[in-house]
Length: 352
Image (cartoon, rainbow, N blue to C red):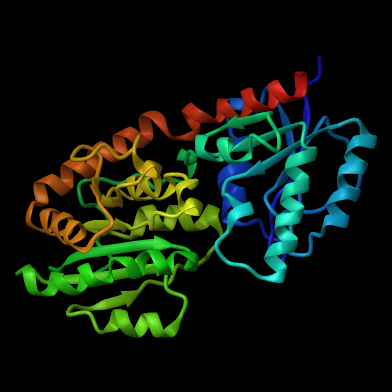
């Protein structure tokens, strides 16, 4: 019996390069050796009637997607006899921004959700959000591809900052600027309440110049770190192998949109080997065990000041949290253990 053929229509930029989420959610899991004997997958930015038993469409698919192109794609997939699977890892029907372009995107997502033979999401919250549109929803949690993680240990890889400062770090897309703004008062207070020198490093996260100027006014050095590439298969090995932070920050405002997010930032920081502080929200409630795999902080200034001070003043706790988080990642949240979840979900949809 031949194995099912899976065509992946990944989300991509104007240059046809897959977005980072497409690598995390589809391209890395479906190429993993653990499931290669169960599915034959082919990635593509376009649909030209390629022979497939399952066609997976990722998020918005591409920037020029319209309701008409979605309807045409669905019709062609149905004509081919393939199953249509829709993959979505954010509550994109309820984005906080509102533009004409976003409205077109919402219409496309609504249609994909309605028409799909099965929907794969990253969190139980997303399943609950979309259940009224399509009851055939399967949760496959995010996992990192261990093939992209740089092995390190014992201080063999030097910290990027050549100083004795305690280095705080943040990595994320520009869409998180408002989350970072939430902890700006806490960062301002730190300069007055700790005796150790501090440095704050950003990879992404800051889009507007006005906010960058506010960060520059903090009472300690703040600098941007520019990755050599934004392409995920090259970025993750660089991030886990060359960036050395003492404390990683993951603030997240409590909004309906954010509550549907996954704990991917915890996985990234765990892979880097850094002790992290995370907003005390359901997003992190399972993977971040307070005082064991990280610290949880309420979304107020006093809580963030206290959490950061605790890790600045207790280097042994930092090391313990970092080691426990990385152990959790490698034991439970890498594709060597979790890629099978993708295979099981696709097989269920294919056979129903």
